[in-house]
Length: 367
Length: 239
Image (cartoon, rainbow over all chains, first blue to last red; front, side):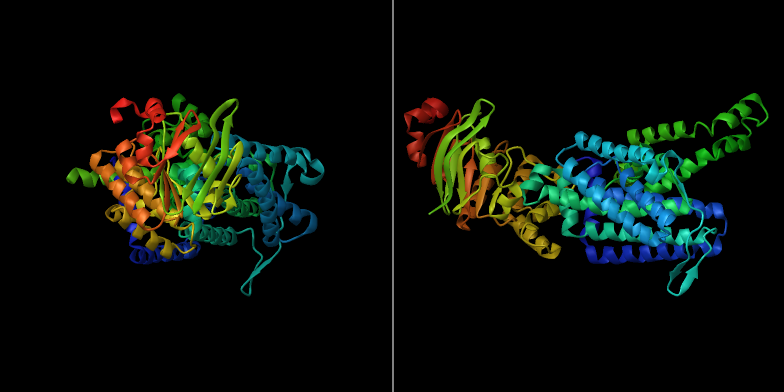
């Protein structure tokens, strides 16, 4: 037996003692949520809040994909379709009919549901790489439609909305959307919803059936599992939550155009969050987001070049320094890509799986 | 009374007949052995019976219902379950979870499924391995896990595809005892097996397939003394 199996056994044993494990998990969850809820009270820097919101968005996306990709094992690389469905529906309703985004998001889920039903009825006849390709194709069709149906979507120019209607929650009316705080709380709320949905799925018949399908479709079929029904349920749950993430993104940024909400890179980003963090667990997408979001931000804002200058190895005014300053920020996509490849090569079970392996190796070393 | 009737079943892959015009009945509560050389169409017949392939011609009748064209999950719900010649553990799930997936065929409650699963693990004497990952088990235990998992679906008819393949003497003996215990519980079984001693011991009747056709059917004694069977499959040394 190799180490990874022992690791899994240990973690599963833990889950076996459900009562104690659950309460410990619950306490940690409450503490974390509490701390996050109080966070904006202590930190007012808009940039920090912006990073937190990006983290939330990434976690929602990753967690949603995890349902279909991580648990049910159907690697959809076309989740931009649902993200974009939510984003575009919300923005169009807001701009054209002045429908508040809180209702627009619900309409967006409706559109995502329709897309998911179409994808499910066609693509789930395909297995493995063929399903992946079909899922990409659907998202690309939507992107090209948004690009070319100029009368509806405004084509490549996109939709810009600057004014958001007031939102009343529990007697408090929120009108100040220039601050990031309302978005922070909306994002946190959505994270809680997606984690809760994932938790409920994992601890129900659905979760067992999804995982059985992931592990072996034929065996699952022979054990009484209706494959297409359960794959579709997984996809619909995933699509609804991804669409919420899309709506949230749209009202936060205030602008949507085809490449930013329907592009292939959005689909890939969503998959990477889980692959990097570790698929099929609740913590995976959280860890993945904690790795990817700061990494991407650090590269984008040229933190690397600045930290090199600080070490004194290269002077900022020298030729090399000027070169780095000029080019490192532009190369962020390249460096990001290389790092992702490295992680996938050396940590095939994601950061989470890798950390578990390390812990076991240490314990094993001591005997 | 026959729980399963195979009526003139043929399965064609292009022009190749993997099964042609196979007919027999399996009596309620009995064990039916299915033997034949490699490529005789034994597993194909299992696949036709359990819904993985629709038969090209003929009917599969289970408890009086025509099964042709039913999907494997429906077949399982109706009370027919199978194991796989090449075992198919749900590798990244625990042994208990594997069996629970089977048990969830009859219940929506995880708690109840967990109890049923534990019960079946005790039947195959693997309750001590409940929290192990299925992917890490040795072949003997994988086969037993597969048995526990199908038993958890509470079948009336069990189709076992070479559950003793690749096992050593004592492991095979354990499986034989298990099959006899299952029979004592009133569950009908169809067993594909190459180990002639084992199949002779457990079968009430045996069907012999060669090249997709039924060569003969009879009690174990009739089968081993039949000259056609000796020529096609057993060879002289078995007499």
